[in-house]
Image (tube, rainbow, N blue to C red; front, side, top):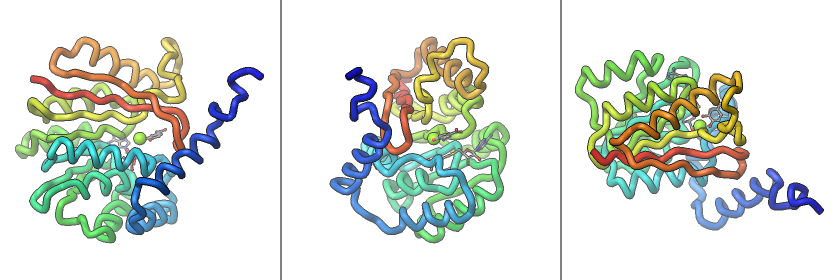
Length: 230
Ligand code: SAH
Ligand code: DHB
Ligand code: MG
């Protein structure tokens, strides 16, 4: 038997384990199911974080003691909701989304979940809305979750640093991409965006960073964690 045929290498097994994790320690909250159902019915792609990953974002927001959170890439607002639930009443989460139909679905979901008073969705291309945030004096943010178009990652990371302070945590989703991150000369603009981000971070003295590979119901991917130290 070669090791690649072993059950532990099987994506179906990864999903079963995610289900086990969810059943054991990710408490069932019907609002998350309602948000996913509404997103699916609106025809949105099912590329949101898994529930276990959503809960990780929530725990990171809690350990940060976050009251100001920025998200780039809302989709239907599933990851947004996980983080919003970690905020104090006076906290604020700003989430940026380019697609009007995703934005409309997300806004309805925030109402449905009763978080519309702490979440503000700003519609438009992030590279146009991020400068506006800075001009209007938003930030610094305690937590920034980058999860929009992947070729934009290097620019979004630069903006995240501008909108950070010492102690901020920057998280970047989907940086492993089934291992394709190793494709030096690949034509995939998403992979090249991720590779450029790794290179930027390697030369960035202001952050202490790592990347973690993940498997689960969303396949094989991973995320970067970058803690702003100055
Ligand atoms: N964070 C979500 C998933 C986001 S999917 C979750 O885990 O629940 C990526 C989203 O980024 C999509 O909705 C897409 O429309 C949006 N997006 C793509 N390019 C963008 C851009 N230039 N500016 C803002 N949002 C963008
Ligand atoms: C893609 C985007 C995501 O945010 C994600 O979690 C998975 C896939 C994508 O654009 O392919
Ligand atoms: Mg993602």
